[in-house]
Length: 43
Image (cartoon, rainbow, N blue to C red; front, side, top):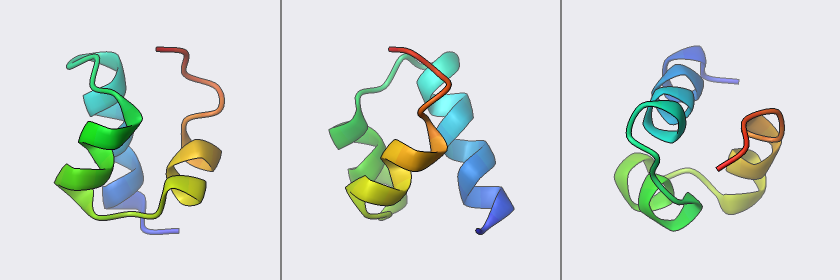
C-alpha cells in the first residue's frame, strides 16, 4: 500500500468530504483499493 496515497485519500474523505468518484479522479486509484482504504471512514 502506498502510504502517501492512503493518507491523501483519508484526508480528502474526512476533511474535504469527497465522494469515492472524486477521490478516484484525483488520486487515480482503483475503486476496490479506495473502498478497502476507506472502509472505516463513513461519508
